[in-house]
Image (cartoon, rainbow, N blue to C red; front, top):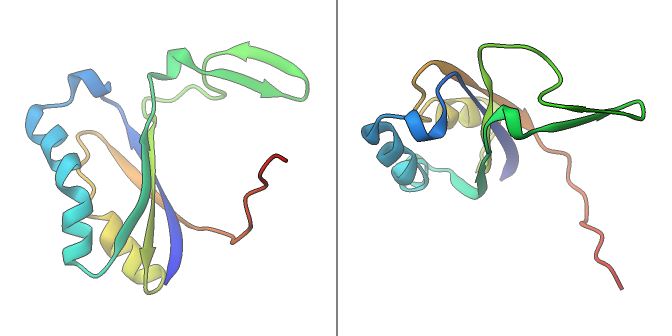
Length: 113
């Protein structure tokens, strides 16, 4: 199966998510598995205010762009094809935001030593 990154964009801070949405995120791996996919990894991100951006040698506080929605998390899933990945990503609970699905390019992770 092909791997896809699902970027979660949300306008609500993680601490302010309704409890039913938080619980739905906890159940998402099982729901995706029930629909023929598999979550390989997932991460929630701290608030955008905690970000540091490095671009062209310039280091600044905060996210690179101003927006109502910010990247709140990302997970990697395995799906049969792009259409299947999109259907699985649609299961992601969102309050005021959306998700972006991108195919991953396979590569070996470099390990020290």
